[in-house]
Amino acid sequence: MLRIGIILASVRDGRRGGQVAQWVAETAARRTDAEFALIDLLDHPLPHLETEKPALLTRGAYEDERTAAWAATIAPCDGYVIVTPEYNHSMPGSLKNAIDHLYVEWNDKAVGFVSYGVDGGVRSVAQLRQLCGVLQLADVAAQVSLTLAGDFEQSAFTPRASNANSLDLMLDHVVRWSGALASVRTAGRAESEIRARISGIVDGIGARDLDALRRVYAPDVVSFDVESPLQHVGVDAKLKNWAKVFTVFAATSYELRDLTVEVGGDIAFCHAFGRISGTLAATGEHADGMWVRATFCFRRIDGDWLIVHDQASMPVDVVSGRVATDLEP
Image (cartoon, rainbow, N blue to C red):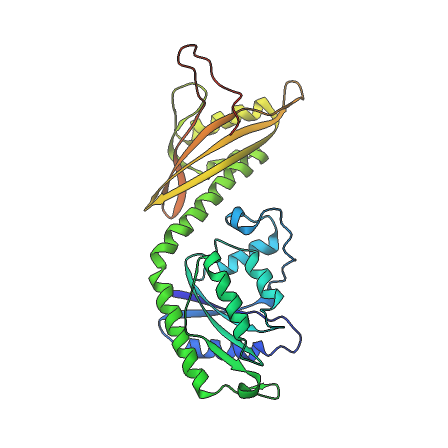
C-alpha cells in the first residue's frame, strides 16, 4: 500500500500547526487507498546545513547521523502532505533546512500542501512549488489554505467545511499521483541502493574489512582484475585478491570518480575511475596508486543488489606492451 508522510513544518513553541496536522491525519486515516504517517520536524533536530557537498551530489550517502535518520524517515514514503505556516511572506526556516538536507529521497514522488497564516499561507506554498522542480517532486494543484480569521477561533482550530472538501480533493490527487509515479521511483530507489553498495566497497577497503566486502559480491562473482589470472571466479577468489592488497598496504583508501549507474529491471551497469592508495607495508611510505577503469555489473538477488561481475583495466600501448599508469581522470 502507498505510504504518505504528513510533514509538520513548524517547530515554534505554541505553534498552531500541531492542530492542523492532526486534522489532516485524522481525515487521511479514513481512507483505504493509502496509509499515512505524521512526521514532526520537532522529532528531527537537524543542524544548519553545513556539509561540504550538497545532497544533490551525495546521492543518499550521509555521514551525519541526524541527516541519515531524517533520510530513513523520508525515504520510505511514496508521497507527502506538507503542513506549513507562512513567516514573513515565506516558508519556515526549519522546513527549508530539512528539505535541503536530502535530495534523492524526494525524487519522483507527489506532494500536496496545507498552509495557514493571515492570508492562508499562500506565499509559503508558492515558494515550495518553486523547489519542487529541482527536487523532482510532482506538486498537485489542489491545496488547502487556512486563514487565521476564518479557520481559527483565538488559538483553537475550527476549519470551515469548504476547507474539509479541499483537503479531501488534495489527498485524492496526492494518492493518485503517488501511485502513478511508482514505476519511476523503483528505478530511482535501485540507483540509490546500488550507490550505497558501492559506498560499502569504499568503506570496506578503508577499514580493511573482508567480511564487509563479502556482503557486496554474489557467491559466483566473476572478476577481471588487473592482476593474473585472466579471471577470478567466486567470492573467495575475489576476497583473496583484496587480502593481497591489504598485505601490500598497511593503511588503505579507495577513491572513485565519475561514477555512473544505469538500471534496467534486475540488472544494473556502473562504471567509474578508481584508485587505491595508502601506506606501503614494506617501507612505510605513502603511495598514491594509479587510476584504473572500473566496471561493475549488479544483479538483484533475493532483494539485494550484488556484484556478479567487475572489471579493472588500464590502457596499454599495443606495440610496446607498456601499461599507462600515469593517466589522470
